Image: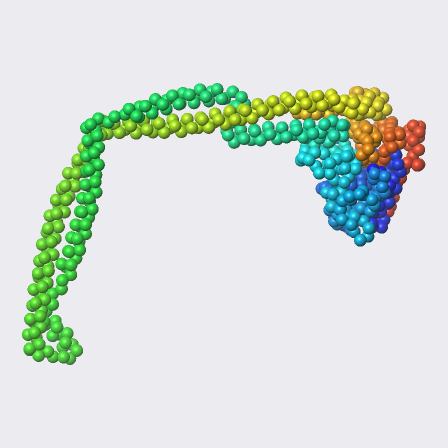
Length: 582
């Protein structure tokens, strides 16, 4: 892949045309400022972000393009690419980031859908998958979660962000360890599927630790706690068996058994007597109420009542009333006499029941005293309670022992898998040495040119999988760390240049040259110019004019006039990349 042109849809944008091989974008400072400080806002980093954006990157917090989008989301950027020998034009706007418009040939079975203007509209995922196939030979359908993708790999060809230049093997400070291993293993020609296996093993180990925590165990407890647990379990099981026999053999003496039986009868009789006494007392209350409610009626009261309304009763009527009232008095006396007789009978019955109740309660207390004084029921209840406690404890011990056995079995399996995986990784590392030794040798040559002493690209196999690091001689200088990033990126671009599917592109922001000496910057750019020209890949460097060692580069044979493709300046807003200040 090679970029021919970078452009935008709005006026004022500084179009960039790139050459094959070595390219420079230079930022000039006209307005006085602190020497050595970067040119903020001119667009060097934004240019790298535009390339990444058109090649499928997502916008992140803190990126310059996020600021541009917030001010005006009408911007759309276009890359004119040479991809697999075909001329392709790729456009992506800030307003609809999931829509990629591609003009040109994309093969016999192109992704996306055709547009009336002759272009094709691709979803972001389709564009990334297409680039992964044609730039890195990836499978269009990622076989697993832990598989390399175009964006995670191309980030090593166009680093941006504050954490991108501190470690050669990381393109972001928050990058996960397995991603670092996976991407670098793939780029260096190692077996990246081994990294996926390592990560799956780590996930299984983490899941096992979480399961152990939920089981109130720990890996340390699982290591040595099963023997102690089994010992306690055997002891509790023996105690429980002995207790079961004691309960089975437990016998209550005959007098206790008779007392228990009599206690049950007396308790039942007491309940019946209490019900009978309650009923009797309720009847007594009702009869007493009815006796007191019988009124006495006099003829004089009737005559007075009629007189009040002006009616005088004759003597014959008065005599009839006397006869009626006498009959009523007779009935009332008979009813009162009956109720009083019944009340007397009920009181006698109730008194007898109360007496019987007292006798039964005394008998009940005697039976209870006999049973409790002998201890038979207490002993049996205590044995049964102890049996329940030991049964519960045994169930707990059985469950915990089973959990530990299962967890330890799983742990041993994982340990065995780790040993097998480490052996497989070691063997694979050795068998692929022809691929990665080329990268080690290339890194040594590049660092030799930079520092005068060869540096080391170290690839180890550890208990956690692949481990990568770089090492240089102490006299290499203060800018060594970032120049190691430069050297590693250039190494990857070099070893990938000859492959049929290659990104064919390396872009460095000016941050990679910070704190480096002039002679180191000159050597770095000279090496990049030589490697990109001889190995036929495209290199683009963003650099500030005050750290551009023109004389040293001329002495090294680098023709700057033909290699500077864009000059940005702060003399006027139109000199910035977007033709305006943001």
